[in-house]
Length: 74
Image (cartoon, rainbow, N blue to C red; front, side, top):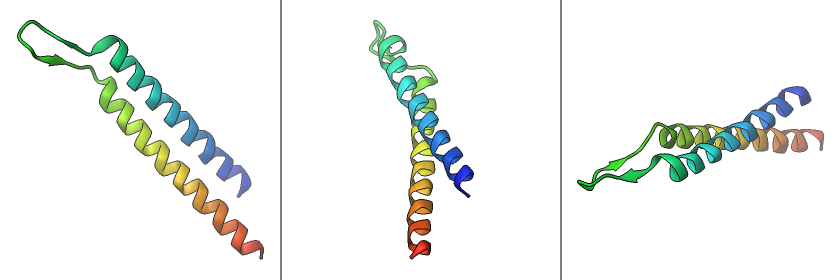
């Protein structure tokens, strides 16, 4: 059980990091307005948002598992 929760924590932190890096890359390199006023964006924005959302869900699951284990020990 402990090894499983550590993998969930690692996966959530990895996904959160990937999402943040994707959003930084999107805002730094790939987002611009052309002469006609159209906003051009890459796939880093959806990738970043999906990674952050899934990472937060994994982190929430990890926290719930830790709380359940704490209550089961009492």
